[in-house]
Amino acid sequence: MGLPARLAIPIFAAFAVVFLGIVGWFLRVGFGTTGAAFGPSAVHEQGDARIAATAAPIATDPPGTFTVPQTGTGTVQNANALPGASTGGGSAAAGPPAPVMQELTALRARLARNPKDLAALVRLADMEFDSQHFDKASVYFGRALVLDPSNPDVRTDAAVALHDSGHDLDALAQLDLVLKQRPQFAAALFDRGVILQAIGRRADAVADFRRYLRVVGVNGPRAAEARNALQELSG
Image (cartoon, rainbow, N blue to C red; front, top):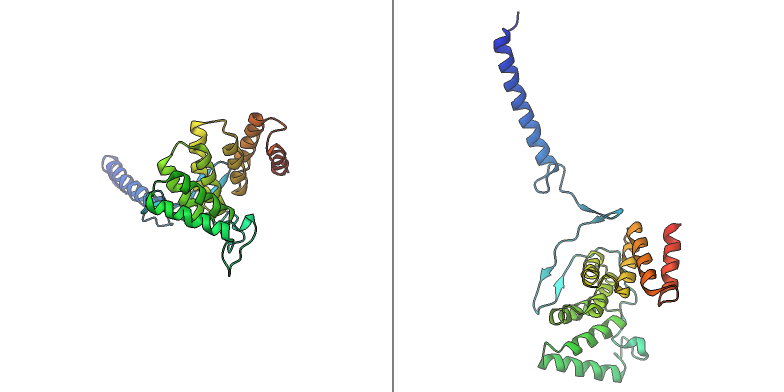
């Protein structure tokens, strides 16, 4: 015969509240970022591509050096190159050419005497970059930026070294800092376009290459490369 309405309605309402509470708890656990029944989210939405999240850098000593996970999209070539090898001479067996070795020794001695020798840090970073030791270059660039954080050239070079060693998201963060202070800094715009294209953020890459061309003009440095990139991205 069933329960009277005055009893059935309160009982049904109480059951519904309990049921919805259980469902809500399961959904929070299932889709949460910690302890998730379905596993934590592994990507962050950025631009028009889904990019694997990168953990925060781990600070180390000396200041300005850090360890970051690899995103795996950078281009690492000629990993056995030697500092200064791009200037000619040197081999893996014999070491860098004598003039380069002398400069390296002198620069390292300067840093031993004064770890805050900015010019020595930047020069060593450039030499390691030229030899395609991008991780080593990143360390020196990082130490230089601790001493001179507002230098857009050093920060842009540091971003390129990070990209070439596979740390694309960290490279973008460095370029974002440059462009926040100097929105029309041409080198940062171009390099940011290159990295965005490499990781699949096509719409953002197009926007940066177009901004770059507006800044440098049709005959500016690397303008032809920017136009070629735009043509590739439109295909």
